Length: 398
Image (cartoon, rainbow, N blue to C red):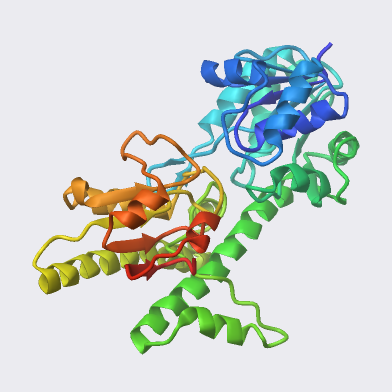
């Protein structure tokens, strides 16, 4: 008998499945990508995350984790699928609806349905309505809750266990049921609330971070015009006991901070002025970086009467991972390559070996064969590298 079915085996679904399997639960992980299913069933992984490879192999070898393209009957169902955009940054919950549709025929009295996908406020209740419309006999007989993760890529396996979690049921008994479920593999505190508050909490946490990063990015624009080293300024300002300015970069990326604020703005456009402005600032920062790189290229051409070779270093949305989702660095590289001769550029991303649009080269090759280095992501390899007498555009304090 399967204990848990996880729908979606991505950056959250797979580590969560492995964690549950490590606690003795029989977990069936479901993904629409057959290559992902085959990879996991061989005890391998398709994403980069420290400690995940060892944990997956152990769970598969013990028979506690099986991957499949189709869900089966279980006691609990976790929906951990993407919620992309449609139109003008409007949240698209079609993947959530599709995943839910797939398990509706399997549901029975006493089952637990948990939505972990980042979702607009009210999504869990919408799924409840959809389930009961097709299975009215299940009304008041199943448990439903929204339980978002709070993890940082690169440290997921630790944070899934030790971070606090917000647990929001559609009713109090669902909240209690979900808390009991998570307490079997989470050591962090479990904070009870309702589904709508839990949904908004996930969005607010990331919107708050986005606003804070927007301040840092805006400060970097001001310092550039004023001739001030923004990194030194922030370091000094943070000596104040009640000041904690974040580090600027070339924008904001990833599947949470760059996405979640839009979920609030889409439903509360008049009330989310600050949140909307922060998104505009962080989006603009990438265009500002593009302009800086293009200007440096023109300056080099005028001085040396030839085109420079430029190394564009970093494609991931944050340091030391392979995740390129909503990455401003990837956006910058693509825009620059599309408006220049690609043969004059070296693209470096140490965490991937292949890209479907760019040829990836080693950092050492790029440093030895470039005139200008643009550092877009603060990967450890970039921080340690000696760039000698090259022109360096440092957008990430590498």
